[in-house]
Image 1 (cartoon, one colour):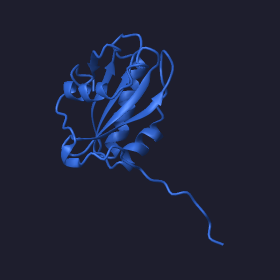
Image 2 (tube, rainbow, N blue to C red):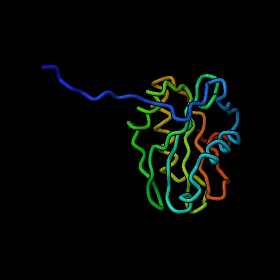
Image 3 (cartoon, rainbow, N blue to C red):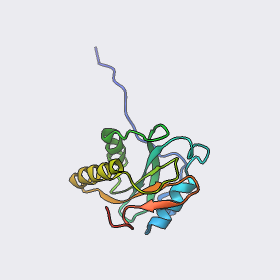
Image 4 (cartoon, one colour):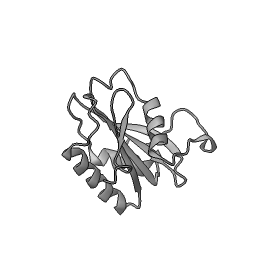
Length: 149
C-alpha cells in the first residue's frame, strides 16, 4: 500500500508580476513598503515580527509575518524564518518588528537576535540588509543606518 503524505508548497498571493515588484535601495523605501502593509490597528497593542523577502535586484518578492507576540515582545523561531526565506528562494532579507511602546532604540535582545539571524543567513549566502524597528506612528529605527548591522 502506498503511503499517503502531505504536499508542502509555498505560494505568492496577489498575483503581482515580477516586473512590477517594488525595488528597495534604502531603509526609507523598505520602511515605506513595510509600514504600508502593516495592520495599524495592532501596532500599539502587540509586537509583530515580519520579513521583507528580496530577489537579487533588491526587488520585493513579498512580506511574511513570522510571529506575533505580546505587549513587550515576540518570539522568533529561526527555523520558521529560514524555512520561509529558503522556500521562497530569496537572496536578500530585511527584518522588521514594532515596539508598541513607541521606543525606537533596539533592546539587547533585538541586537542579539539580529546578529544570530545574520550569522545563519551568511551560511546560505543570503544578505541581511537591515532590521527596522517601527513605532506605531510610522517612525522607524534602522540597524543599517545606525551602523550596528
